Amino acid sequence: MVGASHLERSSESSMAAGKRGKYSRQRAARKAGAREQPEEGFILRVIDGPNEGKEYFFEQEASIGRAEGNTVLIVEPGISRNHARVYEELGAFMLEDLGSGNGSRLNGEKIEAPEVLRDGDYITLSQTTFQFSVLNAIKGEITAETRLGEIDGIDKTSESQTPPLVKRLLGTLLRKIICVSALLLLVGGVAYKLLAKQTIAIFDQSDVPMAYSDSDAFFNAVFGYGKYDRSHKDRAIVTFEYLGGRATLQYGAWGVDKVGEVKIMLNGETISQVPLTMSRWIYGLKVMLPRSKLKKGKRHELVFDNVRNPPNSDPWSVCYVQVIQEAIPQPNPKEARHRFELAKKAWEDREIEAGNAYTALVGFKKARDLLEGLAEKPELYQETVDYITKTDKELTRRFQEGLFSFRRAEKLEKNASKARLVLLRTLRYFRKDDFRYRELKRYLDEMAEAR
Image (cartoon, rainbow, N blue to C red; front, top):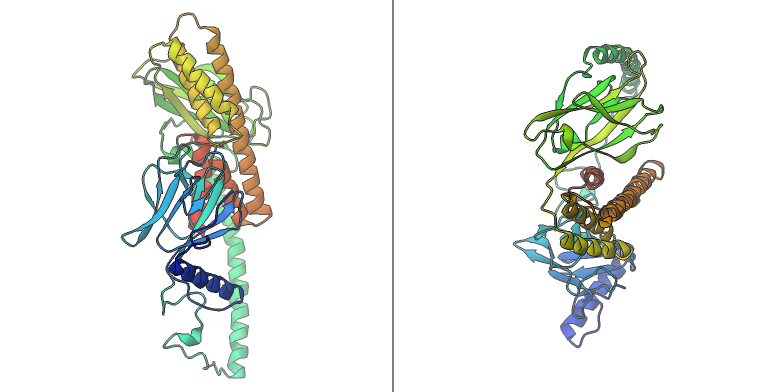
């Protein structure tokens, strides 16, 4: 439950009482439709959480946590005693995490140091999300609410006195221009389609190797023969350098409707195949690259090969292609057991705090790595691997459900606020280096740019 702000709590100070009265009058004026200028400061409005819709008004600083004395009191799992604060510095408002256990997120991204806040930003602490708004209306500034008659130099009383004959001639000319433009667009569209088909045929990149990169550009690329890319009809070739340790291929796929339609090859040998996806995107698919076929410091070739193309023209695509390489530490069964127990506790508490599921995944992976180098694997090794599979599957389910809900809110319901909130909620389950986080954050950034 979120406590009242310092402007709404009782106080023995007459100055505080005066401020309460002032802000109460301002809120009443806004409800009545008055155009009273707000004071400088900021608002924290709860858009998700126990007290959704509640607003907190501050002039310079707000402290948030579950301990008494915070100006915004939140009593819920995942909130630290003194969790975060918003304060003014050098004319800008800042968000700072106060060493909380679960961290603070700004627009879905966990902050490591104080960050500058912009009007409309989203602050997420555990299960509560605030929208930050600035109260700094500048007198005389031209805004969307400014009437034209209030701006110097504009005479809104003067109107065009165009003669009727001129109006008719202009109307006829305009209709002719529209007809000619429509015809040109039609002809241009047909020409573009013909040119596009020839371009696709000429610039088939199926036999051109692509160097793997951890960049967002490579991560967000789609390869294959479908809606997003038609330049890899037959295959997509990716080269990478092996650094030693464990190497895992991770990817998403679409359009595979025949068993064995798309083979995965390493240095010319088939090591796996893309599972059936039909007309859906399936994410988080993984293939462990056999270490016996890898040489440290050498470049290797991964190929997604559609064995039906040619002669067919079957649509297919792969995305989010990652080659994840992890160093394997010295074996330590005792430490592995400790890591496993901590991860298991986080997994059991995954409903208390969204980030606990990912904490569990990281812990299970560390436990597995500490057992990887043993010649004879203990039972704990397989138990850890099973938990990794189960945890990752749960996170992928959250990701896919979040994307589905986001697209439904954005495309079908035309509700941008709801779509943005879905992304913010889903982001809480992931960390920056995860492919699911990167994709959700990309959508959130696109929505922010469109605001």
